[in-house]
Image (cartoon, rainbow, N blue to C red; front, top):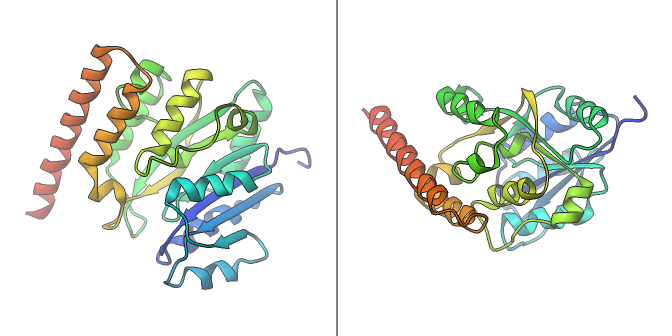
Length: 261
């Protein structure tokens, strides 16, 4: 077990005291022996700093004003020294045993440059929700097809890990993007490297009233489509992406109406 690759995890955060301790515990409780955990706080004014101090001996952290999530991530990536690097937001959590599964995969397939897995959606209380959305993404995830990725983002960011080589090759996150930097990164990675999939649930993506994915659905999907257009000259793929976005937005609106009744 001493030859396990070093894993660096980065968490950008700002005023997420309600959830961040669960995120931290999901990382440090992995008991992975070769771990580097970096938390970049944007100058929180809630109880986040008190929580970070509580885990001082297990994490590397810094609190300072930043220019948004992508900027915070890139600061963390510049610090990271791991062979395998990933980020998880301060309201999401890893499944137990994820790091060992990922490390063993990279060791078994040394040519792999990025790996993703399944990801559940949970609510603010940790209960699994939107199972149909998870099933839908997992269906397309099996294809590992880049053209499909240009139509819809079937990759779950919390369950995705990159090699240090990939990051050195394609660079860090686009700091001009604040909603879809992870989709942009997947498109950049997928254009150069084959996607590898672990057929297990590796993480949980939390949706709550303050989530960007709840409050900016149309803006998020429009930004996704603009990103995809940067990687494809196909008018057919671009149209399919537009139609898919409209279908998903319509479906979410129906669900919201039903949930409010």
